[in-house]
View 1 (cartoon, rainbow, N blue to C red):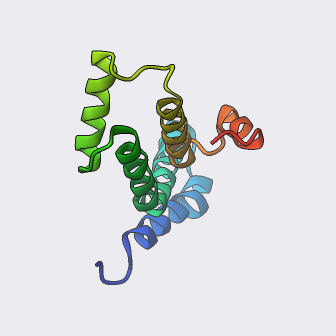
View 2 (view 1 turned 60 degrees about the horizontal axis):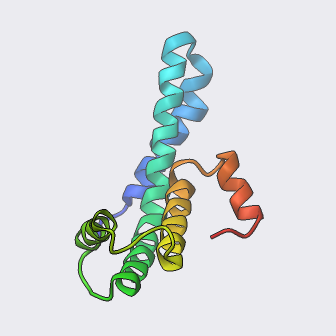
View 3 (view 1 turned 60 degrees about the vertical axis):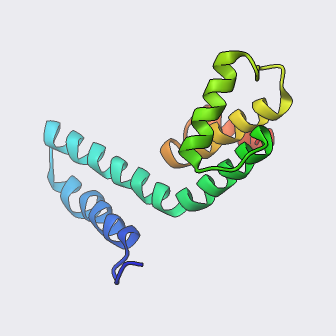
Length: 126
């Protein structure tokens, strides 16, 4: 547990400073890099907010898919091994559902305005 302010609050404060105070006064390459930094901080904010729930959901899907428990990294290594060995393939609906859900969860944090992600949400995919 962190003492106030939380990591989310700190990251948000820096991002807001860049967007609201610094960027309007910057030009050219420096403005571009400040915008990139603000976008990176926005990704970190979303990862801090969504990460624990996203990771727990991914772990639950992997446990169901693989039939065993373990840490998220361990389960993902096992999933990769099974795909590589041919034990799981694209014809497996549970695998496809897992891959789709995992991809959408990552896009929600990394690129929530990505047009393909938005279309998938509109179609109820995921």
